[in-house]
Image (tube, rainbow, N blue to C red; front, side, top):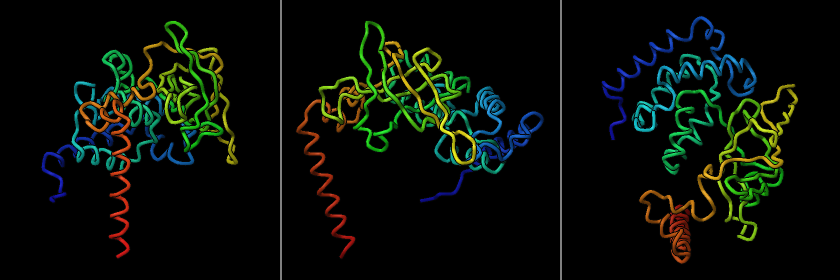
Length: 278
């Protein structure tokens, strides 16, 4: 396999390197090397402005398909972009949750209406997102999520708590896992909801660290609301959006298919383990 970059890729590198060198100046010069791990609280307003500057120049979400506002950049070009981003000393991204998590989810599973509403803000760097997964008793064990969402006419009503929520204090939107079917087994009946943060039913409390800074937050939902169509996946039906993946479709339609897939996975794992120990 030839892992060398092509001439086209190297031309792309020259373009992005020149752009960083020309744009990390003036008001943005102070951002060089800031906002990384342990420094997430630094220059937030300036980094939000930088996010919008990236978006205006088309340097957000470069791997997204062109139809969804991206550049359709190849994997090589995406690697080059982040190499040059690091080389230039460009600041830690505040749009990382939008570009890296919710954006790709909407590209793969979002409805046309959801893509039209939410992808432009992510691509343009004008809307910041946070992730509502972890809870006090549900960190890695997301099957134990207790935050509830109940349907009330044309809206979902949320009650519960999330924790370790990065960027919640500056985010306009949160994508949250909520239990929408209390009768379903723990690992089912969970929905993926898009929730506006600027409303009376959302309370954000910073988690102060030993450094005195607060890069994480607790988020409390107390009757928070979001539109009924702001659900990306609901329980088992989320798997039906597998976009051509026969395993996902079979799993969602026939529970026996899921059992067969699990058994085949276990056999493959045992076979590999046996080979490693020989």
